[in-house]
Length: 209
Image (cartoon, rainbow, N blue to C red):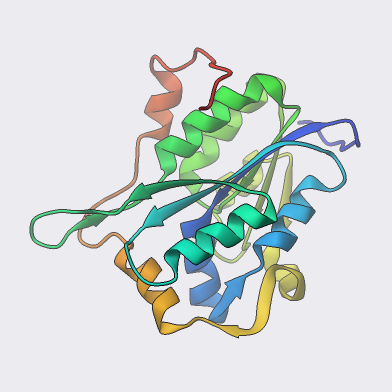
């Protein structure tokens, strides 16, 4: 495993916003400090690109939140919440994040995943095989043990909540509605990240447009 950081490393940051939101909500009832997360992820190195993946639920305050992420320095990738007959919902970015990481990997020395989702374990294994260092930032209490073990470095947000959470800023009703309307219900939304990695998507494209 690659254990060293240095200032010349080219880093890419990939934030699973939904995963962080629900972890912060369930553990602390507080909002996430995305600016400090990005600063911690970069750690004085050369940032190539930083992505934040969000779900559009068409509620008040959503656009402002996305704009705030852009001002921090993220490229916001969004997709609409899918609502199926009977009320089942689907809203996740698992495959999209995996594809972006694989496309960017040839340009990076370090891949930084901000998510505790164990579905990304195989993705980290794959980019490690390409020679990339892998780092994960997440709440240790809710993060997958397999994901933590796979990463070259794991930063536990639970150990420094003053830095990673906005204390005194509780979730408003609108903020809860944005996320809760995008929460999957009565449908298994786990995506086949492993199949994506093991299928016909091994070719790397350098264009993420």
